[in-house]
Length: 313
Image (cartoon, rainbow, N blue to C red; front, top):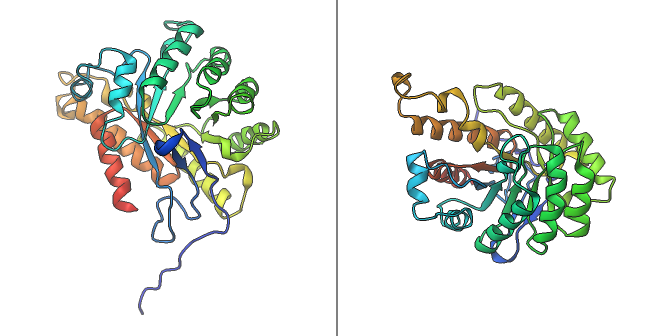
């Protein structure tokens, strides 16, 4: 008996969110089929790949990263150079140095850096916070004001600090926000409901539902993303129809496999290759589970994932 495929195409769809301006603006979401199921229907906005740069600059301890950014001595220069990296659709600036438990850079310094980077790049910009909820509550409204008209995505607002960020980012200055939860479909939906109750539409919200590197409890991440996409498309749950973005560079380059030396574990091979493999394996997994965009660090990882997406579309 011949095989007769049954396409799974739904009446519901993932909401479209536009980041950036002009001809380089990108759109996340819009699909009416399960993740990467291009054989069931058109995916008019394929998943996107972003490159992460911290406010301390690219990690030049990694030879491949150092080689790419050679000659770019400042963070804005590195961000400008990243725009030419093959496969990159957007730039993600992570304000790690703003964390009060670390360098504790001032709000004014961080805003000035974001403005300088924004003036240099030609691709859409994503700003990642410090990870400290109180500091991010101060940072994001100032950044949203300074970058008015740029249509940037601010990652991320959490249940504890979403109100001032949503008011400044979306209502006052027309930016986009990421709604961050911790690998739990109920928490993700609850935060989306709270944000929507402030009058913010789904077209201004991207979900960051958390991540873990493949092999480190990743099954919880995959299960959460799959359940969110299922509820959004199969059950038409409008509070879960926002696209998903997944920053995974930091996690991928901080696990044991990408930290311990080649002298201690020669059987694991070159350190850089391990990091690329962790980024690629995790990125493929989250894209298959439902992420609409991933944020990586290494040029080789980004080229590999970009080709992977292109080959499937």
